[in-house]
Image 1 (cartoon, rainbow, N blue to C red):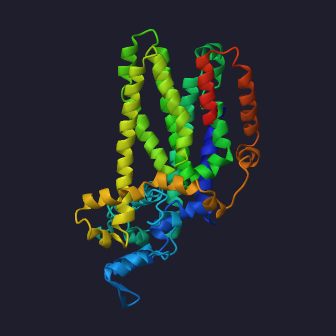
Image 2 (cartoon, rainbow, N blue to C red):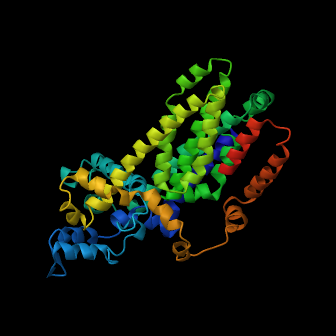
Length: 423
């Protein structure tokens, strides 16, 4: 009962921080620029400029298609104050994450409010439009545009951060510890202490309640960890049965992992560094569960790759539609290919967002424009600032783990190394 009481207070505090403490402003500029608010609602001139660019005029001067294309290719983008990552000539961020974190909850909220208030159909929202948001802007106040996405992310944080950790604790607790502490766990029923510690940390109370792509990335990593842990627990619990049955019963898991990896990669390209050890752990567990059969591992890898590529193609198509089809230079490409599928094949490679982001961040000259710092800053400054004493506990656990390598099996050491590299 005491754990439920503490956890309930922390959840109320999380929602309180997302609602009442949000009115003064933003805790970080990225919440505004990368969360979609500036992209969808911050510039009232966007539609007007796109509308009049359909006409061959610019500042009341007639332009040919070639001159209009030169204007598009120049440094002066049609809208000067949208985030530079979302300019078609850069295309470093996918449009799907901000649309999911900001535009989706606002559209749902606006529709529900219209239904509740029994308003007329004149204010209906076209949910298929990615540019025309006048209906939402006309119905919602600035505070609602600011707060609704935060409440939406707070709700998701309870599911994908608290919920995933809750289940992870269940699956990672050994049977021996469960039997030994059975009476103690019955007395301390409620959320695990790990969930309470997570819910009380300021990154969850503050950062996880905002529409950051970092928050979305953390949620996808948590879900990926949970699926791999559940898969490992499934194979471990039926280890005495036929290995072929174990694989067939979980044949859809690689498809889910591939889809999740694609979602995380298009949310932030850094997701690849977090997902790699988890995917390797999954493939290793499948290899051990199939009695060291590489054929089953190859099939799992093929299923994972097929799902990953299919989902990625969907993301590329959506990003291409946003960056290319609604860009001022689309009429120039239309002269080359009249069919949209032809234009997609010809120009889609420019809008593979994770690759563009990786190329940009791999150049030190580009990073220098945003400010450079020693790599050790993350370990000495950022980690203690975000997690406090828990960062020191994590460092000491890595040291203690090295001492256990000699007395542990190779499989246990491999899992421990991969899990700690992910953490």
